[in-house]
Image (tube, rainbow, N blue to C red; front, side):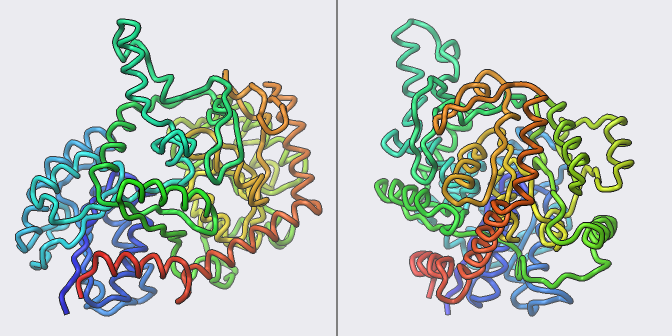
Length: 515
């Protein structure tokens, strides 16, 4: 039987790489004629190898034949955290390795020195949608003979909002609008700025799968990150149009309308699209509770379970990037948790995060709180003591939370988060969104839903968090939990033999696999 060789070109983001590792491990385990080569940022190489092994199970798991057909390597050495620098090195180093793959030559990992034996030429390339310069390298080497599919992570609704035509609630072509205004006014596009990339005029946007919202509601926080959105938009838009299709790394059970709209749009461009998700670890959410596991986190949660009962703990995390523009709001929330005797773990992993000694002492003295710069999120979410996830609503966090049956207290910041928070609360009824924590010019404007506007005071935040915590402990909180647990069951069913994910994989292999 002919072998199918899939090459994955990763971007320097663990949140993008991790789901592909799970996908790759399952593909090679279930299909003996598939080989997968993953070219990765060296910072994530060990984590990727560990993720593959974890998916195959403990104590070696998969047979040698399976393990050698999932090949993770780096084409260069670097410990840089500079995204632009890493992308430049990726662009330079990927070419020779991909050329060797195209010529069925052995390749060597620049970090570990591992030599990977010659394999058949690539059948299909799957490129992270942030790996913009790598598409040209593939095309320069193998032209149109090797199809390229984009690997698109994040909530599908937000990708529609950015790239889709205006008829689907997208931005249309903000680049063309910027250039047209510059020409009309006799100024440069730079002088026009990014207003067409960040529309905030009070117009109603209706994106498939997201409740109607004012355009400015997609920016509920004062921006503290300088993201080159125009440059990214141009690059990703070009990648989408130059590729042959895409994987939409999201769940049909979470956002079916958004995924169907995305597929329909790509179909109108004569491009294939496959929805795949959630890509959570094997047996996620079903491993029995083991007292004593999990180190200091397990010890804390076990203690809270004994003293406060099941579902008593709030886990709080804004991911590895985001942090409140008004950090005093975070302290007000923690004060509310302590006053209500609501146990919590607060993970502040962002490099922007600052926690005062005074707050740390207050949490320690409370006896019900834990502060940490890193946490085993999946372990915490699946511990029986955990009941709620106060989250920024990034995609990985949302899917891990619902995959654990844990409802969400939403504090969205930017990107795909505000639309997801609205969907979680209004459509799925698995979340409560905090409103008074909104900040900045746009965050203090009224909502489309009910005209409510954040007051912009610590007092309002204090009152809201206490009200929300009471809701969590009441009948509505139980309703949200039941809905989250129902979503967990749907996620698990999507990977059964007749599940939607299996059907999507079958369609992909029927089109791009070699028989």
